[in-house]
Image 1 (cartoon, rainbow, N blue to C red):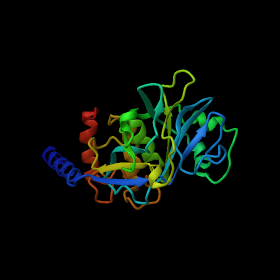
Image 2: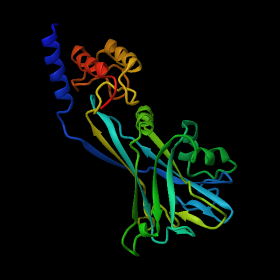
Image 3: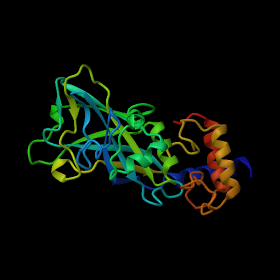
Image 4: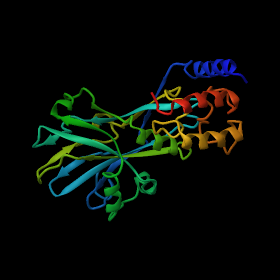
Amino acid sequence: MNHQTLALASTIALTALHAHAATNISIDASVQGIFTSWGQNNKGHNAGPGNILCGRDTATIFRNYFVFNLPPDLVPPGKQIVAASLIGKLPWHGYLSTDATETWTLFHVAPASYPVLIDEATSISNRTDIFNDLGDGDVYGSRVVSIADEPAPNTGPGLLAVSLNGPSFLSNLNARLPQGTIAIGGSITTLVGNSAQRIFGFSGYESWAGGRATLTLTIDSPSCPGDLNSDGFVDDSDFVLFASAYNLLDCSDPAMPANCPSDLNADSTVDDSDFVAFAAAYNDLVCP
């Protein structure tokens, strides 16, 4: 293949990559709840199902969490999740603090915590490890909350949107796709003193109590073709992933990574046309 043919093939592959508009998919939480600083879940603390109280209430600190079931075939071949946001739903009287604002921060949750979080029907206690996990590690995003975010009576919940667009969330989400679920932890990271400082008070699954949190995913052609590990570079680590997929060829091969991310032109195979697109991005190294 000569230089002109390579250039033409690269142009065709990259054009195909950006041929379709982005798609937004919204998923309601399958499970949402709390863990107390004593290591109790909703049932252990005698809180209603779906209550996501977060912050300090006298001596007890609460952190919340959200579990989302990801639909099968969520991401078509050649596409990526390029943006995400979580919407927490604040009921009337859901904000109480001596401070003008509080910051709600969302965190990575370790896979080992998933079975405990999903089991909302069992009274769980003494799991301070789960409480700790919901408020440390990689930060996915944050939102400053105030009384102004609280809705008027009988008008539906106040919507607290938090952007989750950092590479840490997107790479973790892609890693969770074969398992079918992702969990996100929440903590107020501005607690000072022992007075009440909380959000999502009186919350629950019922619509009048806010209802279920929502995860919105934007699925599109990748803005950086070839960045298969979503670290902002197209380098040797991506080449290893691409070479493995190239050897498998067929996106339907059970050994192919979920969503066939190396299929850069969305034709259900990882072949020479994808290699041309990958090579162009590899030469640029740094994502735009």
